[in-house]
Image (cartoon, rainbow, N blue to C red; front, side, top):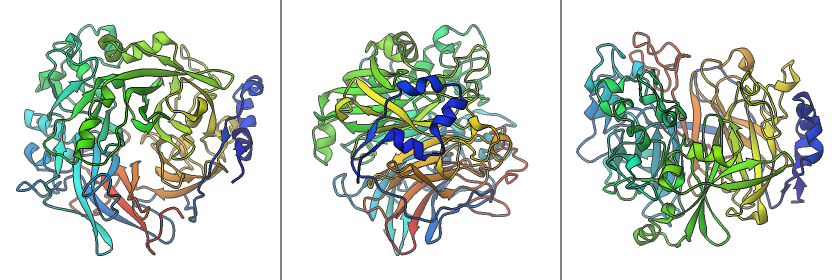
Length: 609
């Protein structure tokens, strides 16, 4: 396919330059060079679907959806498979053996080993980000107790399940020797430059929390990322600057864990928050292995860990820090990846993520960019945000998932939104984040110098500004070539080079105000050469669409539905659990359940064609 400049690509969209002019950035256009798009690209080949406000999962004609694994389903640990109770009366011990709440990232690990490329038997590693205590307990947060805290902690973390394709559908294999739950109180360990530092207290760590996006390594391990860990902590006294920089305060998110688990009283235990905000590595093939928090990747609100290889086979990990006015990061390993797909290969690469360099990105006004090195000391990593501040990294509009094109190595990051951009006492617009009151978000793309992910310089441009193409406000129309969307979050390339975009419109604005015409959260497919974007999937009411992976043959797409039925307050009324949604079971006595879906073509063909 003939190479296309990104400026030309964006001109095809509904007027990138007009959007930037409306944002007051016309003078910057002359100094923004184009990145070029080289290599092939794949076009979405399905019929786009309309927006939806239904309590249903919608796909194009010729596709079908299967619910595979929902909150409360047993994960399949031999001899320990408690059934889900529809009144939410399962115990904390039950929940630790069942699917957690609020499915997020997902990765596919073929069986019998990582090199098999099997498309009919695999392990799925799945994040369970957080819990809705209004649904988790029969009476919600009334009669609050240590047992309820323990159950909420058990609803967090990660699951590893075994799945198989039989009789033209997927099923969870139960029991399975691989089945595993990692929760908010599973023993873990630290590794890397900060391990053993007094900043991590006695060095022990229990659990992983707010597991949002993730990643997969070339040697067959799973990376799970801790995002909004601050909300579980409460500090009713004087909050020190290092806690305040990560959002710890006297209120938290209302989890009330500190009342029965003193770890989460950040005033009494000021070092405990330092044990969260990391990327953890898990070996899904070994259920007895101890998960490892890799401190060389820095501590912040990790939205993902996209792994690729440099030209010399060093490992590169791209990461976003999901909060307004935070940064994009990159880790480059010191040592090279040792190929091979077996247990000895995983052992040979065990320490790759413990030694290397951590960078934060600066996006310059002229379309150039550079990776700013951060200190690899314990203090510099534990307080990575302060390190990025001192280095002068660019403050972005909520950087979330990162995706790398499988052929060109071009890198894309979602900037979900930032309604505070340009507000009083907040940074104004800049070329990378060109809209004040950025309610719809955008996607930025860059190319590393020489096409090498380990480079320290890059060229950037916008891939798309999201928005409502029918808006009367030109700043809010965006420049989408195709179907409208806002708040891009999940981002993933399939093997053909189709870019899949997932949205996370907050439930307090979903289907109202600026989002009145955009429907429920959705998943779209983009051709990165033409810029065409088509809507492929719409989720049930109150949900976020998040996490995506495919079987190697491309015929099964796994997608997660998070928090269906979520109320604008993000915590359900236990007296009305079905007030917003009753998906996916639609039982008269049921409640909405987050779930993993499998999407397949009815004719068994490759998804997206």
